Length: 314
Image 1 (cartoon, one colour):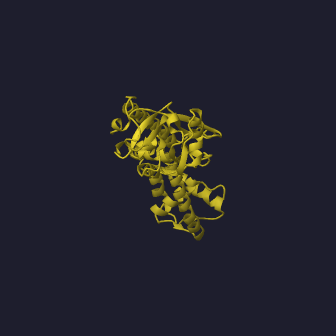
Image 2: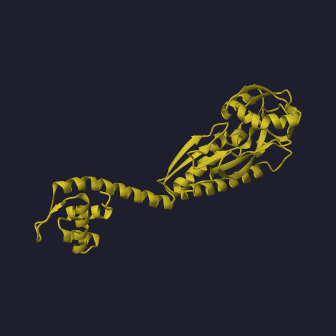
Image 3: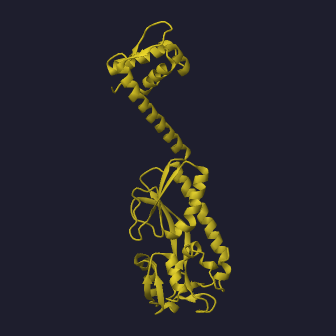
């Protein structure tokens, strides 16, 4: 059976559909002798005749063995057609892409990325997965967004520098940047421990500030709700505030920190495999979107001497 070729099955199906070897040849662009040779090769491979040949213009009849071969042959031809279509879509940039992401990227950068990919490749499949706060892995993913460079056999590009900003209630601090030392002993609503420990503990400790964490939650909206309620201040990256529309909330006041801490937003992909056209296009769109976000940040924070809410109206 290993000698059965798809072209033999295609020819057999055409003969059944058309009724004669001659008309099948016309449909496929083969001579009648070529059609006969292909059927002879098929019959040799399956070990018996697949057609009864009455001769003349009368239609050929399929044998019981031929019926079995045709039934399964059509399934193989359908699968082959699906494979060819999938390969064509892959080469054209369609197909499937698996992306790991995290909260603030998911609300600001990822929607623009998905929208543009679907506009350009309407049939593509985009699968998303939340990256764990600690020790994310690229395994099984085409792309991974993360706020630190991950370990492993990966390549990455830094999309933007995302500054951390202090959020308080209005009137709790004078206008203008706030020294990190001002957070010493203050009640702070924190993010999850892995995230805070990655930057807050070493950065603020270097400035002599040891804030008092009164509550931790991974949800940016919950953190901001606790600030509004007066539980404490918080320090969040600009992407998180921008994605939550905090700049338009009159119940919040946003301040730059001095010195200004920041994090990088990085996009990773496996170094050991070639990127699909869809994944490569996703990287291009992510870079373009990040450049737009960076330009917006520069526009909104151009005046360092003011509190940020007035400049964050977008």
